[in-house]
Image 1 (cartoon, helix red, strand yellow):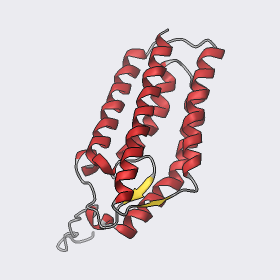
Image 2 (cartoon, one colour):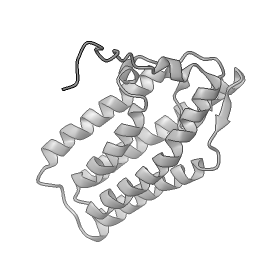
Image 3 (cartoon, helix red, strand yellow):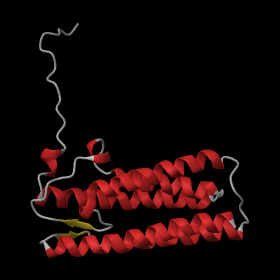
Length: 187
């Protein structure tokens, strides 16, 4: 019963996010936004759907129960969901599940984006571990962590390329590095 409640909450959250993403997509495209990464996007969708299928199957077929570490995992889950909402709200109408870039738009540098370039991908990566471990679905955790790494190795470069082409992305994320002290002598 607890497992069904947990998985239902997550699936409903994802469904709501898809509605928001579609609304944001329309808003951005009405303003001239362009879409990139259409070739790999279906693979991302398939991976996320199969994650839930695998998770539900593994827990039910192998009769997995709540982990003994559930209080820690629940805390980590709440942290990931808080981070997820922080990232989504920070992007506002620019958040999407697809790579959609509005030419000339200001690059978002608030919320978690002031600390790392792709916080939502980091959070999703953590979810692929935390969510399955909650009910001891170790196979799902391992397989989908590896698949996610593969997908992100394609997704992130495609997204960064699009952002670099159409916005001031590189300038927004330049780090100020102090020049090495010229007075220090090598010994």
